[in-house]
Each structure stands twice: as C-alpha cells, then as structure tokens.
Image (cartoon, rainbow, N blue to C red; front, side, top):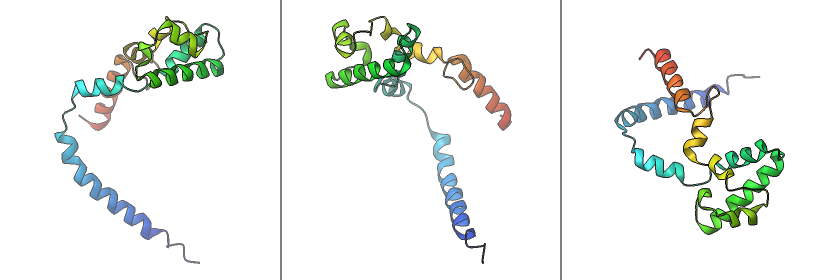
Length: 140
C-alpha cells in the first residue's frame, strides 16, 4: 500500500501557509492598533459574565447555580441592550434573587483583567512578563 498519498495535501498546506505568511508579514508590521476602538470592543458584549458568577461563588453559591444566574443576568442585559454594569438592583433580583449589586463590581472589565494573575493571565504585570519572555525567545 502506498503511504505517500498523504504528502501532496501536506505540501499544499505548507505552500498555502507560506503564501499567507508572505502576505501577512508586511500587513502586521504596518498595523497600528486603535486603543479607543479596542476598548470599545472589549466593553461590548458580556465577556465578564464568568467574573459575575465567580463573585457569587465567593459568597458560597455553587458555580453551576452561579453560572445560570449570571447567564440570566446577561440575557436580561442583552434584552435591554445594556452592559452588565447597567443592570439595576431590581434587574438583578429579576434575573436571580441571589445576585447582589456588589457582584457587578467583579464584572467591571478593568477589575476582571487585573484579577487574572496566574501564568497566562490578563493582568498588566502578567502581560508584560509574557511580552518580555516572548521578546527574549525571539531575540528582540
């Protein structure tokens, strides 16, 4: 049996990757991120919903229940077209009676980013450590 049949797709994939990298390299080198737009995009959506659930867990609520409560809060916020931070105490009570306005502090994007201090986390210190490591690895 010919075991070489897999080579052609592999070489095709390698050629496609090489071409893509050749096109992307100058584009990436010329990119200038727009911090304001990035901040807007980060604030949109509900990516801190797990932090809301985590706040409930810290108060002794099992994660599964906290996750469902946070999900209902996200659903209500999305229905109203507002961020999680825009929910009122009444909204939180409607989503789940165990949600407290103080829990919303954990869902603040800046606070959520700072809280992730483990290896690979999103805290400023962690990101700078990762950047230093990658620059060293790349010889930059």
